[in-house]
Image (cartoon, rainbow, N blue to C red; front, side, top):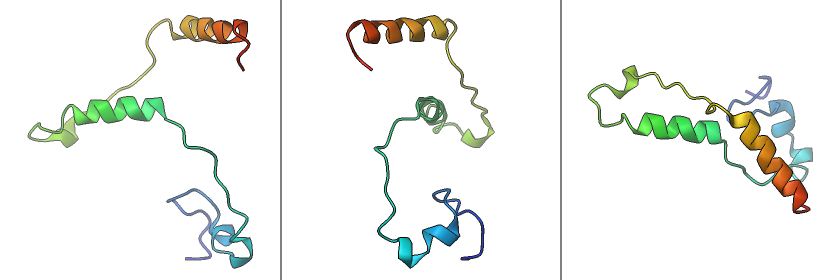
Amino acid sequence: MYEADVDPSHGQLRSLAMDPDLADEWTHVSPVIDYAAQAFAISTDSKNSEKHPEVWRHAIGLKEGWEARRAARAAAREAMGGD
C-alpha cells in the first residue's frame, strides 16, 4: 500500500502521506463549495425516489450569459475596494 503512487481518498502521494517524519508538516486550506458538484447533487437528489434512480444522467453547466454576470460582479467588487 505504501508503494502505491497516489491515495485516492485525498490525492496525495502515499510515500509522503505515510511518512512519519512529515506528520507535523501537513496543513489544509479552508474548505470551499464546489458549485458544480452542488448542482449535480441537487439534480441527483431530485431522482432518488424514482424506481431506478441510477439510470438518470445528469448534465450540468453554466447558464447562458454567465461571463457577463461574472465580469459585472468582479467590477462591482473592485469598485468597492474588494479583492
